[in-house]
Image (cartoon, rainbow over all chains, first blue to last red; front, side):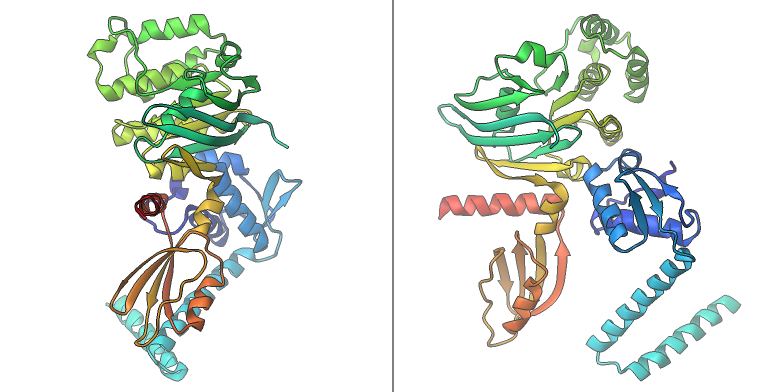
Length: 131
Length: 298
């Protein structure tokens, strides 16, 4: 297996979260398709050089989120939900937007003003791209 | 229920200046156990007892089903043991040692030994006396790994290794895990190694086991909470908090029994929770030892 999956030691998040993130990314970009078998827990642990228990935790959380399914405690697959990759990308956007809302609330910025800021951010990006 | 590769119950050993007390240590087959603790905590003594090298005063020791120290000869066929104070023959070459190990252990994997030789940057014709400390450690580990034992017991396997060699050793340890029937117990001062590859963690301090459990559960119990304490509000004493440092209106609380409701409990007393952070094993290690030192002084 490729090492594009590698765990970062400078990333402060727990390793199981990093593994979840990496798997979600693979599904989001379409490397891993709906219903496709993914590495076993033990295999991924060996590939990533992390403990079995850590990968197991990541898989359990992903099962709870309905992103993967594990049959008979052995083979794990990407859930057969149609368009799961797009759904994951959608989720990521939703999380960023919620985070923006939270920070705005802390700074006392009203939702209307936040909308305005978002449009401005869009304009800035468009400007940079035309340069 | 899974078989236990290592099973210590109520093990004790008294020396003049050090006592190992009531050690319960279980390593299920197929798992990696990381043993951590400060210098002189009792890690090596525990390892020597389970290898039958030191006889316990009391308690039961079973390794791969064999009672120790009585069954140590039978047990050692299937155990690969390496420790810092292990000596190889100075005048002999690495290759001589490999042939020697091969003549003793029927499971010796000559091909794998050659692979390890390359990965560890060693040469068969090198004499031990010409090797650096790190190279000696690697040679000793090679001799143990190539036997493919059911149980690896390694006392500080990564100490004194350069980052590349350390990485190689960790890689070999996790490769072992591809086989569900093999188990590892290793001690280390490098908490990062332990955090990365252990399934379970056992924390020893001053001759006693402080914690021994599933690594993910263990990390999950510890949190650092960054708090803002408004004027006129006193920081409450909440359960699960083992340490608080406060400077002005900012406080940092360390929890060793974190529950999701803890931030709310603070908020209800008027304290603002700015952030809840996970902790690395290194940070937990320090917090744990500091706390137990304070208890002694108190």
